[in-house]
Every structure is written in C-alpha cells, then in structure tokens.
Length: 285
Image (cartoon, rainbow, N blue to C red):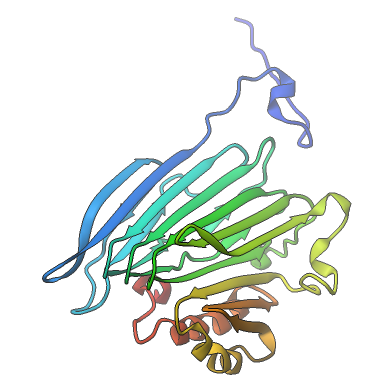
C-alpha cells in the first residue's frame, strides 16, 4: 500500500497543491408577505441550499418575523448566499438572522452575500440582521438592493465586527466591500459604497475611517417622515455616531470599540426607529 501526503502553505490556495476544489456553500431564500383581513400573513416561501427560514410566533398584533438561518455555520471564500424579501401592499414585516454571521479566513475567493428587498405601496419592511463578524483573513462582498413603492417604508441596519475580540484577534489581512442601492419608483434615492482592504495596511486606524474602532453599523430609514427621528436618534447615539436626514431619508453611522459596545448603542437606536414595534426576539436572547 502506498500512502500519499500532500501539504500546502497556509499562504497558498489548496489548488496549488494539486487538490480538487473544495465544495462551496450556496443558499437562497425568498420570502413574501401579504395583507389579509386578519393582518399580515406569509404569501410565499422558498428556501434552498444552506439558507433556511423560520417564522416564530409573535405577540398578538406584532408584525411577523422571518428569521434567516445559515445552516453552514459561517462563510468563507467562494460561498454565496442570496435572500429576497417582499412586503406586499399595506403590510408590515421584519427580517433578521438567527445569529451573527461569521466570515472565516479565505484561502481562495470571496464570500458573497446579497439581499434584494421589495416594499410595495403603503408597506413597511424592517431589515435587521444581527452582526457580521469578520475573522482575520476574511474576504466578503456584500450587496443590499431595495425597491420601494410610493408610501413604503424601509428600515435597514447592517453591523460589522472586525476580528474576534475575545481571542485578541485583529484584522491584519482580508477585504470587505459593502454596496447599497435603494430605489423608489425605479429612481435611485440612496447609493453607498464602502470598501476596506488590508493589502496596504490597516484601513480601520485612519481618522477618516474608523479611527481605531473595531465595530461599525450603518442604519438607513427611508419614509415620508424620516426627518422627525433626527434629533431623538442623535440623542440616543451621542458621540458614538453621526446622523443626517433629508428628503425622506435618515442615515446614521455608528462606531464602537467592539461588538458589545456597539450593541449597547445600536439597540436603543433601532428601538427609536421601529415606531413602537419591538426588536426581534432573537436579538434579546
């Protein structure tokens, strides 16, 4: 019997050692809600690959929640996850995730995560996934696309933690890009592109980026009365973030030393913008 051992440098893709490509994670989820005589109800559900959707029973009168679950337990280079959520006319729904999404070190390729949100006339959609945690060496490309009808409301928040603080880990290699495109009646009303790349040093330590902070969040509210939340949200965030509001949009950037500190500011900020609705129960476990 002949035994063959193959080793590869940690700095080189496994493909260079002659090994076959590793299996990659893919997942799709499509959820749609509709308005009925008894309130908002599920209209359509599709789940494929590593994406699963659960619909926990909420309190009486509360908007339905959809919880996205990545059964792979995390993502690395070459993995792809895609979610589509539709809030039908006149209904309200909230979408979150079961846990923080972990992005592991990539030996090759980039992990891709995309969400496409649709809010029809007079509806409200709250997109509130839990934090994304980037491990050292992670490579992630994330996209958030939304199409809003007249009178629709969108609240979207995305938080990122750079490195595992409990392990003393900091980002030394890797890349992260985040693209937002929000349209109302087909017209672009908000566009944002963020990119960090550790190939040329630490981008987080620069005064124009995070000034050494280890976690950040972006919050966007698009609705006819977005401006009324400007001063209350500034009061909640204090020196942890900046807020601006104009033309039916409110945008906030929040930074913190780490994930725990970010949550202490992010949670009351989201409560202020939820207009009386509660945060997803999974956030409070």
